[in-house]
Image 1 (cartoon, one colour):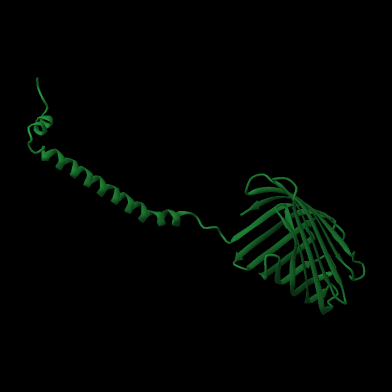
Image 2 (image 1 turned 90 degrees about the vertical axis):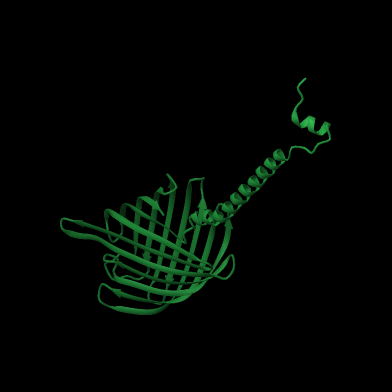
Length: 268
């Protein structure tokens, strides 16, 4: 009967085959080296994987282009464009808003208006903040050549939940105006603003914003109501109604203007 070499060696009291043990030792050392190298490579490439992940941009905003129907001092249907951009850095929040509409009929301008506003907020807490805002508006058919104002004050988030929020703001300011008659006015004003945003469904939201700038010469009131329905993460449809009112206007000028708009919104 044939007996294997390993069994024969132990049975005869001889030293076991050292060649086999040496081979196993070398194999184990090679496995340990390979494991160590893989660990080092994984650790060294981990920061690269983290760095490769795109950082969240502090910028966000939206651009909408639509068709507007106006009543009041202007009776027209025209194209309108608006841009809103926001920037957040720590406790600071900055918001820019610009808009324009223009329409001609028989080579005659029947609508021309521009709006620009910039606001900076500084958070005092989760709900309260300080704000400063500068605003300029020009509407050729409102009775004013232009109206500009600067105000600063205190804001408070009255209500906040997963469905939306309600902000209120109040503060003093200064307003400069030029009427179509050429008369210029500079006065101290009070600015009051409220904004409500509520999610109607998973893809639709309602927004209501009211701003009042009041002084001894005139009180400006602006109300903007809108419903926005998302199509994709970047696209949406919006219906809005804007009502602008001045309590004191030149003779022959209406106090109230309305703008109804249907627009396509691109978010970024």
